Image: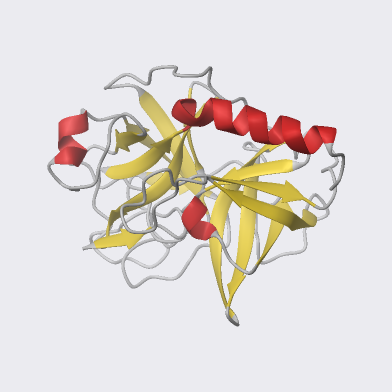
Length: 251
């Protein structure tokens, strides 16, 4: 059974509270592109991850769509009001027009912010890949988020991060019937307890300083590998959409 990764976190096989197996707390503000999303849908709220790609745009997963979304930038501990934090409501969510909520194909969404973020050393965009750039099997990447620390465990207040290895497409194809290597990346070594998990959805898979993937989905037991939207496949849509809103100003 596939569980949407609504936040990035790591599975502890021993269930030790607060102990992350294979991951650790990120150095505060070492990932200035990270965004914490508070998503409201029919009176209920949940959290997602995201990342700043232009001063007025955040990229995330389409399955994080809600009736209203608020973005917090510059955060490390999301339970504290840090002076570095910038809280900006979303003016318009723009999910990919071909997003499929059953197969999770094209699980990507741009969020147009109500105002431009103030770019500082704690808040700045991440680089996106060239169109159709390749992510090779065996490449070491990383993922970060404020998701759960494991099954039946709470979300973390402080940003966590973990290194993940890109896997051969067969590892995900054997595991997930809807996996499509042309638009998705398979990452997380099955022999290691390292994974993105519940609460990290929408966060970036970062390879050599470039956002190559978006946390999309995985198994509900938190075991790797997991599936990430392949950003390079969507660069034309991303650039066209952001250009359109630049021409329209703040509309």
